[in-house]
Length: 170
Length: 148
Image (cartoon, rainbow over all chains, first blue to last red):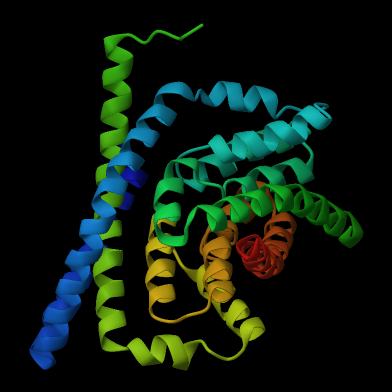
């Protein structure tokens, strides 16, 4: 495990620890509020737990099927419309922390990848396929589908805007 | 044709998924606990105090919170869902959800280093604006669909 991954893993537990300490401190001042918050948490957790199981399965499938080399290949220069479609798809399908993708995109940028495609890729990451069940659970099917549609639509628009603004600044 | 996977590949993917899942679990639980506490302690303030200043200002506030927030996107769904239940408008919540995953103030130095400062700043600014636009069009479209 790299130091970066290790610290990120520890960061989550540290965050949980801080929240637990906050509960303890609030519990000393307003015990009934902490008790209500705990009951509220248990209730929400009961609803979320089955969805988390589904999230795990989808993450497993993504890990199994997606090859970073495939994504990199289709984001190359001179891909035209295919490049746009590939950027959107690769962004949606990309998993893991964004820092990893900055490095990959930086490498592609140095080799001549379009700025618009980089921005499109990064924007498309907003569509999180494995997390869709949880989003549907909270916000409903129609809302989730509409939001995903606009995110994909705006990914291309965002890419063009970023490229145009950067060119203008130059 | 269906791709066949070896036991080793399946086991490797399973381990990787389990490892990543364990990494996000304390964040999810922590976020749920924190949200539960905040909503219990400040139900009125969250819905009426911080938000509740008109759809445009609420959307800007939601986008601003999402922009500076750090954490797994799952946490934004949990927070957004609970805020919604606490009475915050869907437009503000949508702006928060979108900016959470598209704008990264905390990641800005890393993005600048790897993709260039001009690119990083421009992209984040454009993403902030589009988060607000998407919030409005998403909610209006959802309402429109709900009418039929």
